[in-house]
Length: 503
Image (cartoon, rainbow, N blue to C red; front, side, top):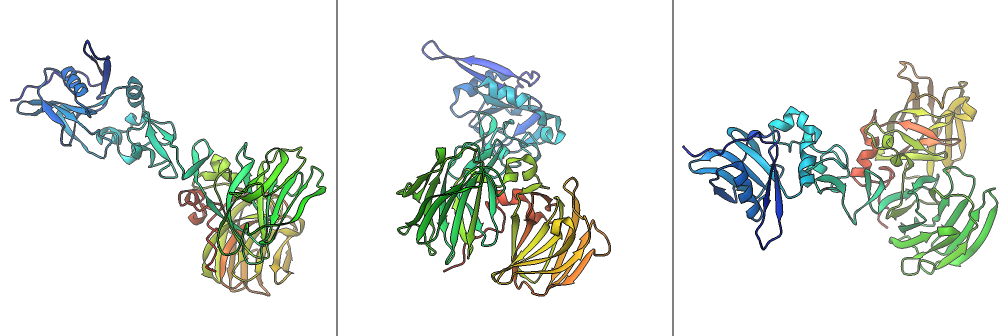
């Protein structure tokens, strides 16, 4: 029978290694909660040791040794020196004669491991501590390998195991929105031809790197503003394929033209993406290609903080990729990135979802808003239909068309039907022009009508509307609206964004 190493309680071992000519080195070994487990892997070396402490000393003398199996292993072998840890994707198996130990050269790493709460989970103890359910739930929690930081922390690839805790890694592919949330760089936005798209600026941001592709005949407005409403200080960067205009509205909403009708010199076009830089630091407005970022510049007198950013593309949709520094307002709140996300949509704006072309759409959503809860249907034609609940000053339900047709239709007087203090559920169904609306899962519709003009081949569905902010919950009824899906797939504002069609 092979000699057995005397088996102490496998919690913590400490040994100091060194010679007269070498600096002292300290090794720490932890077998906490893993007594009676053996790691199955090809060892660097197999030795005989008089104690587990000597086995640890042998590990400290061997380059690349990061773990050990100590106990009755085979004839003449009671100390296996390992080049991989249990969390390198290898299994720990039950063996009453063997104890497994991780080896560290930093006591802090050891302390973090032994104090990690997942040891209270039996599945983590039985399977080592690398089961997916034992992975870090939040940034800053203990880890042993990068894989611990990719199960629950999103987007995948952002967090790495650094100094035994999950931390955001330096990356050219992601930027930090807030602690614990990263987004892919160069998010794609569709700049809508009918409505403003609002974003929130990361605190301290006063310049953006963007890449723009104009729709044919488009007139683009990029605006930094003090709040997500159409009042107060607003700085306008407005351009077509031919001219640039810089102007601003002051705190009272008074217009101030600064630089009007300046030629773009080919700065943007409708065939390719053009890289631009815009900035407004200290009121110094500037826009231009990355090779000449101050091609058009002027000074605006700014007396309010500029915390938001809005975009619009009149006459035709345009597309813009944004490097970093700006995101949807709800992403700055933890509730906005939950599975059942709560989305705060500014006034006169929408959260969109792109769908395959269809003539039949159902949208079930919850909303808190004082008035004008709108489902917007949009296709390839220059026409949108707004199905409005609580419109006309919260007095009724009806339809409004924008685009090639400007029309109000199908008004039904209901009296007050919305609330800004509680969620009310509505289900809107559109089928080739026939529309029904149900409230709070009622069996009978509260509204039915046949639209005078159909929206053929619907590809965009929006929720939002005018006249005040909306607080929306919709992912609980259709996970395609989940914001965490947009983040992990790198979709940006919503999956209503997509590359422009081929020219």
